[in-house]
Structures are given as C-alpha cells and as structure tokens.
Image (cartoon, rainbow, N blue to C red; front, side):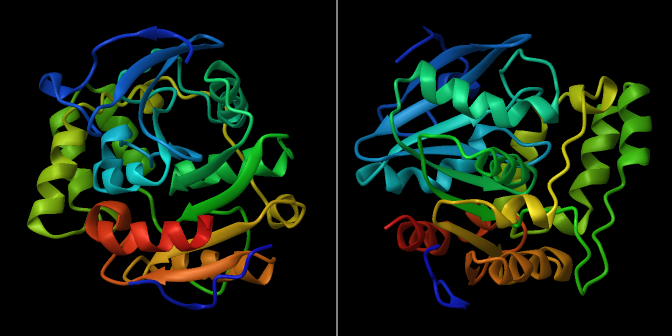
Length: 280
C-alpha cells in the first residue's frame, strides 16, 4: 500500500448531450453513454494522462466533480452518473455497481485506471477494488462508509423520512429536508451548487431501490493495490473514524483541510492536492 502520512492535505458508446443547459462539466469534455445491464450509464471525459474514474456520492451526480477540472491537465477524468442518478438510465442497484466500473473500463478501452469515490461512491469503489480487477492501479475514497464498528457514533441518515417524501411525490420537500442535514452543510456557494444538483435528483433509488451493497473490513483487507482513505477535516466524527480504520487496514490516510463531507466541492484545491499525492 502507498503511505500518505497521517497528516492534513491542504471510446465506446453513443455520444449525447445531457449536461445542464448544454454546459460542460470539464473543458473540452465529451459525453458518452455506455451500456450496462438494465440500461446505460452516462460518462463525461476530459484531459490527458492516466485515467481516473470518478464516482459521486448519494443523491448527487457527476457534476459534484466540477472543482476537479484542473486535474485534467495531468489525468484523463471520467466522471460517471452512477446507475439510478443523473442522466443514466440503468436502474438503481448498488450490488451491480462494482461490476459497472469494469464495464466502463472495457467500453472505454482502459487497460489501466485509477478509481476515486466520494461517500456512497467510495463504498462502491471499495467493493470494486476488493474484487481484484485486473486494470485497477490505485484507489482513493473520500468520506466512504464501511460496514464495521468504529469508535464514533454512526451518522444518522434519515432514509425512512426521505423515502416517504419521495414515494409521496414531495421531491421539493425531500430536497429541502436533505439540505438541512449535517452531511450537506457547506458555504453558501457550495450549498447553491448542491441545490442545483439536487434539483436534478429524482429519488429513483428511494422509490424503487435495488439490492444493497455490504463492504466489511475483511473485504478491504484483501485489496492489493495502493489505496488511500481521505476525509474532510470537518466531516462527521464517524466518517473520519472510518477513514482512520481503513488506515489501520493498510490504506494511506489524510484529512482534507477546509472540507466537510463534500470536500471535493467545499475544498476543491485541497482535495485536488490530496488526489495528486495519492495517485503519484
């Protein structure tokens, strides 16, 4: 495993146009649809150099990675709308998502790739890496959850309340409710960007959820590629404790200053520096 010292760290498919208001996530990017079981996934690609597949967090879409655009000078960025989110048509199914990463890599002809995931996307990334995929070079997770006991009270995700709102068709109420949660806290600019992403969230995964995904400590202990667990310095105690637990399992570890749970949006420059260090 690589060791990022425990410190603060300040084509295939059919091309389509699915960006908000015709905008591009990254400069000079191209958007493609990639077939997977049940539908397709939308990916947006830009840059040159080693490929990074980027997996967004729950209720978000690929636009959460807009602050990582400067990395396109050093890497080929591949931001994914995960199944059940954004413009992708594949139905929600967390258990299928680790396999989706291999399908993306194959469709894009990637012999090697790095994988970066935030929050729920980080859990998917952990599960993918635990399967020892041949093309994976390095793994980075940010604020990822883990099915393990840690020395911190677990985050409370109001899934029951949000599911009830979604199934009642009260999506505006659901979005306001979620924006009041500690995991979505941030500066006014971040909250404005987050609100724009949530305006596109249609709660498919709550209305018709697929299979769950479980990732235990024993699963990650067998990951054989260099891996790093990051968390925002102001993320919840539980998320920071999970990152520390992953460090005990052999991951590199660091805290992103100025970042909460949504560190790639809240502290983009510091997140980018942490990613460059982890993927070097």
